[in-house]
Image (cartoon, rainbow, N blue to C red; front, top):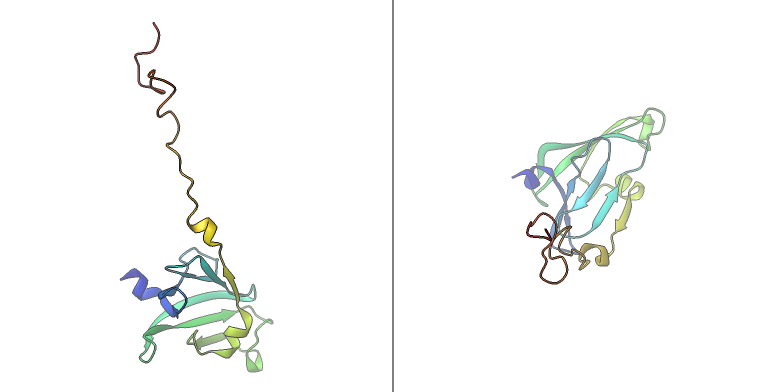
Length: 131
């Protein structure tokens, strides 16, 4: 339900969706299945996902508040309600970053600290060492 409430666009590359990042003051959309991030420009003051849904695309509309004096909207308007998928003003302003697949599935992990040790002596905190 949380993902559905924040869905603003489909992600056709991964068959996932883009959702608004819940971190405050980091206005970006993140894909649910890919390391892809869409960054809003720094002129954006706030992004809000609205309850209204586009029936055709089944995605939520957004309200974008622009900083005073830096709005690309006609007449210097600062509030803009739009569908992210179809809005040309927003599409021209965002930056899309495709994360590396290598980072997503790096085989790094190891066993953590203090496990295993050498030989049969055990690792940290196992007791039974030399006396």
